[in-house]
Amino acid sequence: MQNEEQGWINLTDKIIEHGFGEDSSTGSQFNHAKWAGQHRINMSEGEIQRNYDLRIEAFEAMLKSSIAELELVMELKPAGTRVPAAVVSDSRQVF
Image (tube, rainbow, N blue to C red; front, side):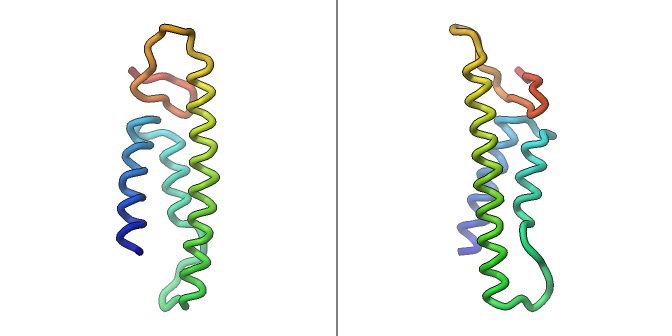
């Protein structure tokens, strides 16, 4: 399970980097979501599961808002205009 989660995190991190820019606040939010929960040595199975649940909740909220941002940007683009290669979270466009 950990390998699957890490693979998903790596892929999603790269998608966010390409979609929003390398130093975007969206990337920072994603990195913050990876550390949801409490962390210490010798955690119980219940604590590990609780951290997993908190990560999933944090990822879900962050990704939903990022998708909404992209949808809004797409709606604001006039028809026939070029879509940017990356959209930086502070509303600047990077081509």
